[in-house]
Length: 249
Image (cartoon, rainbow, N blue to C red; front, side):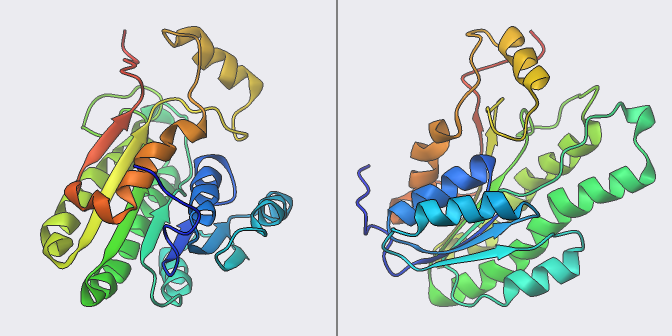
């Protein structure tokens, strides 16, 4: 599916977590195809400013917002203040590496609130608005192997919250699909980003079959489809994007 520099002209996109990692790659794509972009960054002003300079020459309007999202209600009030959003991408959510017995009540609360309750509340806010206009695309990002319930020894809280996005997407698709709104989840395998330490990168390189982590750009073709008008054929899906990697092998 070929996308030109003005394919998304006239559409407005809000990308949470859009200043780094996978989110930054989604922001680059949307800016490159002409969307008006509201780009959210969490706390790294330098990273957000660097990406803003990179995207300033694109044809769509660009708005950047540096804002930490720690409270669900406050975050939804802020995000919901942006009207006429055609595309919502949630590439935001804290990670926790801890054994189950070492996961505190506060850890559980933070994982569930920011990785499940916040995306859910955003879908509840934006999907009805999109439905009233007869069109909308919502893309959420799950965790590695989080498309289906299964066991995790070190990331149970994080993955339990991310696994709930599959139910959220299927439910929203059932309700809003007939009105032209799609809600899907991408569950990437190990992706090389600036958020990982060198030791983490080396670990994944050792355990991956081909010794190579994916680049964020590897997700772009799927992102392009799911956010496009042609993407209406995919709705309520949780899609693994991991080259068939099995962490248990």
